[in-house]
Image 1 (cartoon, rainbow, N blue to C red):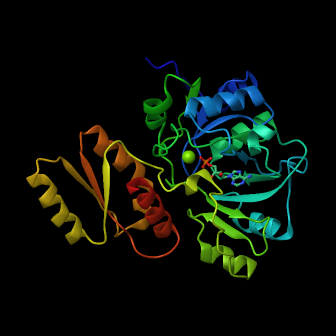
Image 2 (spheres, helix red, strand yellow):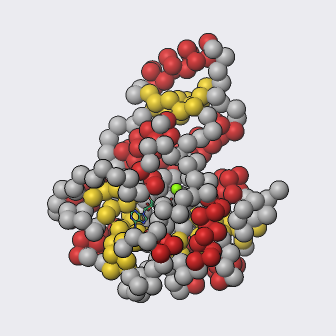
Length: 305
Ligand code: AMP
Ligand code: MG
């Protein structure tokens, strides 16, 4: 039984946050499970609702014209990237300000910040007047939600509400760039490509160093509830499907390589619908190219791991 209310608009969503509730809000990337970034108890509820380990830090979501000086300290490269790509699907890792809680950063001296372009997300944040945290509104390790129903399917009985903003425009999580190193490093690829960042900063990105820096970088993540296989072409996918079906497996193929924007937008909902329709196996055709195509390959390879 779902205890999750459908919220009627920005005012009700903002009031819920002020009442220390945890609610899902739409962003242009995926739905986030939001609460106020100054509310440690609510943030602990967010970790618990997602079953997310507490050492996986949260992203501060901020609104245009908000003064975030006390929360985060921007280096020159961070400012350049924010000026170019915000609002939008780029998360920037910077030095932490005194207002940012240990619950957000997991005790680190850095904090991740993003300014979403989604109008509803912006209005909710602007109404409460301080940053919110908003990790993807799914249970830890599962695929991210790209519509309100996905949130309800995953977390409907453990969160207080969801603000329905329709399907997400982009469909995969933000790019994360660490601006605390010189040169910066791309920790996760999303709709903003490595090449976009290198062009704007006019420098090649550093190689990411070995240790797991971000939960999105875990080898196994973004998994549906069935076996994922990767194919490099449609023909390879069809051939594999034939052999799996001989063993009476129920097989679904995901392939939007002709339209990468569409591929990103549909990826997680296709994975969810195939699993819900009883697929034993999903075969996804890997797109080629940079930017969103790289993001899709990254998520698919983690889903298959
Ligand atoms: P999600 O909100 O589920 O997309 O995940 C948040 C992402 O931002 C994760 O990959 C985090 O590890 C990353 N992140 C947030 N804060 C930090 C930080 N201080 N250092 C490294 N990664 C961070
Ligand atoms: Mg996530």
